[in-house]
Image (cartoon, rainbow, N blue to C red; front, side):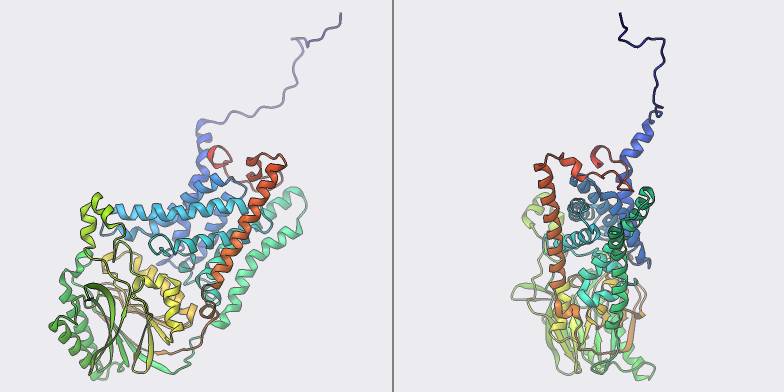
Length: 560
């Protein structure tokens, strides 16, 4: 009888077995993607002001692209949220300086949801040819949504606002913050794709020329475009010049209660203006054509308070020039954050009411609900500010000065509307005293630098407590103050009336990029549906394929 079983005496030919991974190694592999996502978000934060290392945004997005490419949309959702937390938690910490960590953490938790959705979208388009293009457009679509909802949006943290010192800055003049941000994100994703193509080519022994060329173009095109766009950046005077004075009067103390001494704040700004007038009279400083005070420089309503009116009037007469005064006024029972054009002879001539008022700072959404949860929250904003409905452009000694009050500088439409309404220079009166010495003032200053290039206008930034500055149309800061000091800046600046492509095109570049994002998501969705109809396992459509080269970390558990 023939034996049908292998004898126990015959040794098996066994394949070498890898040693089982330790528990620590398994945990590290499982959570490595999460840690990498959060750390790459932190790296993106580090690229923002006051630091001048904007180029760090590129490796931040390269790592983010590496983590997302080829994963499931669920993994993209989680990794995107962690990336958002790593970026926004430190970036927005100033929002809790005076009110505690609750509002800060709530804001970041909500804003990071947008980044999570973007992460999910990027995983879907990451299998498309030329995926960096589609992925960068998805990021900009996320920024567009975040800038509009909820409660009017919160554009703080747009990638463009971290590029005031970067080589990509001239692209702001081409298509505004969306085009500038798109170029940075595209270059970052392209950087990863170039590395991936090189590694894959070495492993396979052959280079896919089409894919490699597309990867190289995703890096080269933004850089070449930025260099070409430098021709749009100019600080040449087109309508003559104006000598402008920026007043920083300082405040009695930082924090939310700075305005408990509202009259003192007004007196400080009047005193600094009068000190400057003495310098002018002595011939040590050029006489300004007009003077710019910051937001909240007169929280005592000069239209109803005779003393406040007299203080402002005396200061304007001392300097002998029109003054733009930041006031809080009540009219017909409504409260307005207002800029007032004050003539040294005729008194108040014109006003501009802030149009984009800050939720939870100048008005309280869901007031009844929040009051039921915590009455202290409603007491912090006792009366909501009303919104203005017209762009603010003051004619000051023949110069057309556009007004963009503080928070409004973050909104594309608010800044552009002053230029299309005839502004030859832009002023961004602000009050940062409530945020102490945090990075907020530097982040906002960087926004103003981007706006200067975007619309090719001089931008002045008068701030109650600093940092006040004068910015040329090419984005250079030519003068700046310290923080929490009384000071003034006087400078001759160019007046300009030409419009950049960004000014003329307005919202169109952003809408085009959103359309690209929608098209990419639609294409990717169609491929998924077709794959399911052909019997492919849905998860397989999102996983790296054999030969893909660089594979994301830890493709196990929830991060596959």
